[in-house]
Length: 308
Picture 1 (cartoon, rainbow, N blue to C red):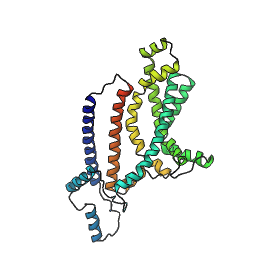
Picture 2: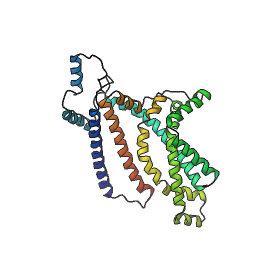
Picture 3: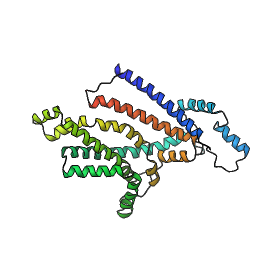
Picture 4: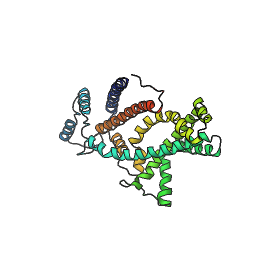
């Protein structure tokens, strides 16, 4: 019963959050001078009226708001203001699988490398392994992903000729941008895992496990790691939402037709409907991932109880 009430409460909060995001985004986009067709030169008056009527720009703002909100509640984001013959739903349907594929591979890489480096650093603290892994993690966090992407293209594409330079459709084209996207997240995960492991390794139940004669590997993996990854799980909520919606810069560098590229074009071209659709998709993913993070606490640590 507590789980049902908890979910109902979280869905209500998510609805309020999405409504606030919609309202604020609508107000900010309309407050900026200009519009989707401000750059068009010498549009005939009749053409301009037809365009405004199609997108309801000829109506008062409050009517535009409620019409757009009503369509959004029906999961219809409307036609794109700049991409002719495309609706926002079609653009999202085409771009989201690309960004999601890129993000999933980046997340797997970040988790695998980050957790491994963090555990090894904590178990072998104040050794060469610890210092080396943490130095690499700090470097991964500090170096912008567009710099890492540029260096990777030079090294792995032009010097070693291991990966293709750009494009979409094969695993080899996806691998290099995924590694570049996941590298900073791997650095954060490594540092969070190390901190959590150091805290857990000093607790009484870990010392008891060692006293019972359990091997180091079993104590670390079966007992310590489970309590140490809670900070990592908290970090993964917003991080996963950000990864899945794509990287603006990396999708440009590697010519990937994902959501990041469309989001950038919507912002620069004042495409109100497309920008709103992208914002709401990101906000929905963020709310969903935070909910999954809260639910996973009870699975990872039995001491955590779900409260309504």
